[in-house]
Image (tube, rainbow over all chains, first blue to last red):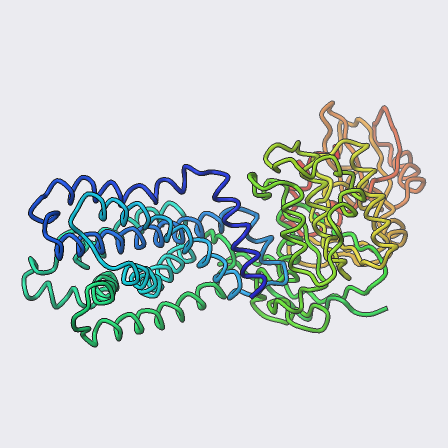
Length: 247
Length: 307
């Protein structure tokens, strides 16, 4: 566990030395909110819809940060000789995976701040502070499947392939999860399909925590299921990994 | 003397390519081992199995009596990253601390830096270091955890003569302090300067495994260089092991005994001129060993002699 924190620290240190890399993942969801939600006064002036839109884009921020950071960082790291060196050190796979999760999770939380601030100032979105904080916590839990999907992508392909796959998965999940278009506009079949996506489950969980109401069992069952399946896959891929493979 | 590494009938394949072919060997504490062989011979594959980076296709690899894939087993193992591997944005001191954090009793950064002559670089980002400075840092990292076994893969590639000597001196001091060092190298001089035991690998097999002096005796070939219109007749003489054409049109012949060969040459009446005789370097000797297997003949023939 101490080693997981050590890896977190140096991973963050490396990232912070190239701040533009962080700004990209922090700024994009904020821009999306500014351009697509704030000008639509029908949404922005309705407290319930605006709050849901802010939540959707917060989920999107965490989704894109998780997929990009994990998928690309890991696949790139595997192509660099520093990673095989780290694998010769007495550190377990679990500690290194946790190190990735902590460091990228912190950046993910940082990417929420502009979305929440813009949403609070420029739209009617609102919630009591404790519910906002609880929402961030719920988001952290709901983002575990995204992180694990990113890690699996990182460990299973080269960085060039990972860029393409991450984009497809990110936009596919974002759309299917109702992060761009609210699910109330979905056709019934699409709505049913949507409930199987972790992005939709994350959205519903956070909305439930922030706005209250009913929590359908498929939400937490889905998050739990994705987490277990992806964790098993991640650990399998990590153990199997021997750095970059050439054929 | 304890056994640090044990390979038992280890084979490692990559697709159709067999990188290591039924290798069995043990590495004991106390003596610096030189691992010698041309590119693609299987040196790096062998090290990666001991480091736990790869698994054997068949056979077993033991490190300190355990599995190298288990992180706890690697607590007493020291390795070098390639010098291009260092994370460019981290400072030298940070890299040392980061690696040192993995070990119970790490060498403090100042002490390690002093030992490897990088004290004045601790505040620099590794991306700003010269190639030689990166090399020194990379080698230093192998010793940060006070390891019992150190694997140095090409430790002085790219260093100038002074840098190389300084690094060898540091490696010898570490060896005296109780670490056992395994060094791979293309530089023959390096193996001769460091190693007490030499393992020559070619085509995934152990070709020679003996004391440095014994290996030198065993492969104590002599080289005859001469110009002749009929090199085939020279090659057919008794005691001629191998030959290769030189740039100036002359030929070099590898022979077991120079006196016998010259006597034979004269007796046979073959025309020749410009005869010189000298001893083979270890590299030339091991290339001849590898050339015994036909597939490598070409590679050995064109291999550059400069080291």
